[in-house]
Amino acid sequence: MAHSTRENPFDLDGYLERIGWQGPRRADADTLRGLHLAHLRAIPFENLDALAGRAPSLDPEDLTAKLVRGRRGGYCYEHNTLFARALRALGFGVTLLAARVVVGADRIEDRPRTHMALLVEAPGTPEPYLADVGFGAIGSLLEAVPLRADTEFHDAGRRHRLTRTPHGGPLDLWLLQAWTGESWQGQYAFTPEPFAESDYEVFNWHVATNPRSPFSRRPYVQRLTPRGHLLLDGDRLVETRDDGTVTERKLTGDDEARRVVEAEFGLDVPAGLVLLRGARAS
Image 1 (cartoon, one colour):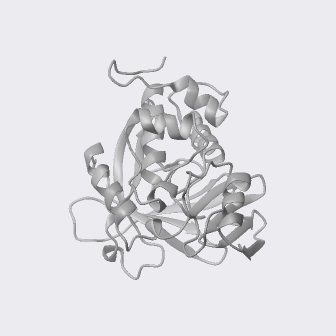
Image 2 (cartoon, rainbow, N blue to C red; image 1 turned 30 degrees about the vertical axis):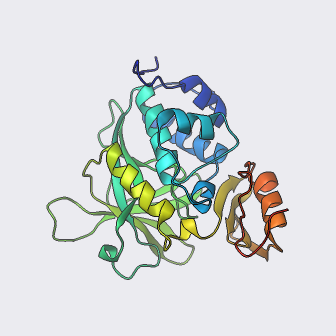
């Protein structure tokens, strides 16, 4: 049975229909992994609100209207807030985490805590699971994985592992790594400290509106495809297939970018939004 509150009932049926889930509605590890992958296959990652100069709403009703009922996606705060509500409705325990994205960083502490991830507990499982349906990178988890150190996980074809990293603090610092085909690359680091929804309101505003944030300066849209991963990063459209083949092309202007976002990613572009700065919308 779905759990809800009188103030904010969650449309679990609508969410499960949106992600195409027809499996069991049980709070167990198999269901968690299945829901995680189904969510990623159904709802793209995108930053169109931030590109338009506004922080996207994290209000539950607004998230449902945008990601469930609308032809839109979102970035980490939106995806993982929505996923957390769905998991809680199914009976999972969920802790909200704040992580430091370390892709390309020399040191973990060089990056602030700006990424949202989830620690999920399923009744009867000996350890919690790391879940994250909102990481905008090809190194993201496709399925939730146990919070277990130094174990290689194969999640729907990708390879990940978690390590504990010394950092001088009282809590374990966990590092998620992805196999790039040549080496293990750090993705983000986190402690199991719980964060509140109000914390993400501040993170969300900063990431969406800071002029130095990449999400406020260029389109960043990605989705899983039957063949692999599709990414629009600025004017670059990059397809990475499951066999490792990478193809890339440069878009000719804003009109083509709009067509690609609508046709290839299945998203409605907000009226008047210029995707490629310096180009004019038709």
